[in-house]
Amino acid sequence: MISRTTNGKRLAIAFVSLLALVGTQSLFAAGVEIPPANNLSEIGRVSRQQDIPVIVFVSRDACPYCRTLRDTILGPMLTANKFEHTAILVELSLDRVETLTGFDNKQMTPAAFGERYQAEITPTLLFLDSKGREVSKRIVGISNLEFYGYYLQKSNDEALLAISSEARQN
Image (cartoon, rainbow, N blue to C red; front, side):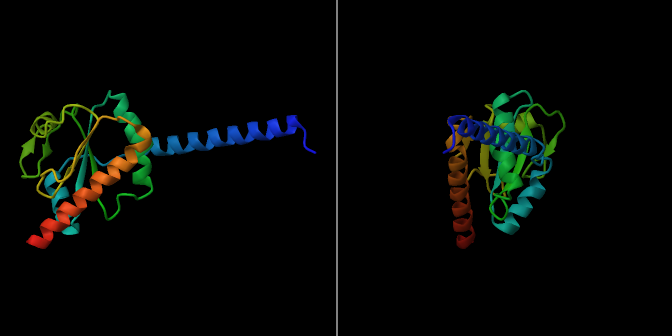
């Protein structure tokens, strides 16, 4: 018969091990960089070639919700290749001062991008086709972190369906 003390020690060791594992994954995910949205025209070209959407993660540097989304959802999904063959994920910080190339191959500021897409609230995920048109429901903020991956997958599936439907019509 195993004593309660032994069971308690085993439970404590298991709990500490679990915390260490979760902490390691969070640190690993925190080191993942989402590619910046520097040239949306080029990203759109790749999107068109592969018939996949572009997911633009609109963020701000000091946004704690953006950091949470990056570290707990997007980073781990990127690390696990969850977007491979299904989407191109890029990040656009509204605080960035350098211009970027838009889908129309014209230079624009990140602030102008945010205004154009009415994406001033961060975090926002935009699901766009190769020309920069929204093809699925955007995700604004974080209402429920536990279901966020599900909502992201649902919006991306809708975007893929819209893009493949358009490709069949052309």
